[in-house]
Length: 436
Image 1: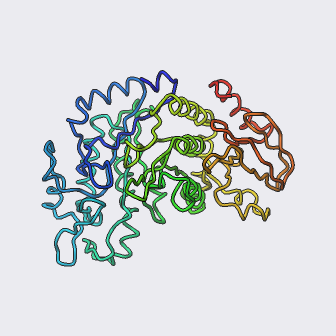
Image 2 (image 1 turned 90 degrees about the horizontal axis):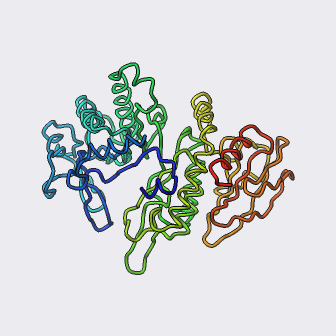
């Protein structure tokens, strides 16, 4: 209701904790048993229907691992035991179920090379979708132990890299099989489609996965594992053929122990919203310690900022549609290092996270340092074009030059090509949505 009151465009609620929440030493985690927790989400199907009536889809979470359910009081199924009885879990060298350490608890990992695993897991996805769910995070997949024994008998080191590809393939196959069950009218409606996003991958993963995200950055300004690393990850993955990628708004990993604390402050959250308004997906995450992290719903300022940049994200939807087609035909990513379009400009070779292109029409110079209210933008050498600052309308036509740009919170340094069809429509939309 608060989001509606702030006129936020919403396509989906992603409820990672639909399976129930467990408290561990690292914070708030999930019960890895892929069924709805009726205690946490009483009236689950009605919730999904109520959201769907507002044209808002419900998305959930799963991964290829299963946790023992001995201590969960309201579990209806014990998928770990089911899988163990079916003999479809990865084994150790002694032929026993390989219990893989995962932070505060151990889990069994599905043997995706076993011929019965895919069919069994697709039934889990079907139960979820039959309730009305229309998307999910297909998490993990990167952690097959290199000393594991698997059904195929292949070298586990090679299987380690192949595992996330198979994980993506199973999820994609299910979406295609489900689509075939729809009637003609449903197939024609965009609302009747499924989407999943993943963090693990190898060479063939983009063939199967629909979307990617970058995993769990620290809630920090760091270059090694914070907001700056999120930019580096997007650019490097784009070079590697991962066209559709994004990060958690605000990062994920908070640490709150004596002498070592990282928690998400409000400024970081606001700047990450500004950054992700120009990536493939605009999606929040509470993080592993929600109570110590700033959230989009924390106060009026965070809610208003979230609303503002959700509208910015919506304003270039028309261009995203074009970029999806371009990516499918040419493999070009949304989020592009300047080298892709200005390879002969030596200066852009020196850039890492400082700035990037959305397609080839929007230039973004994000604010990635605490308390900074201006950034240094570089306007590359190459095609003759004039860059237009979207907030002030100021023009920059000096190719191969740098300029300091004012970038207070709420007004990141963003430019469009002056006079271009894409740029003009983007600006018109921003005006229509009352962002300018």
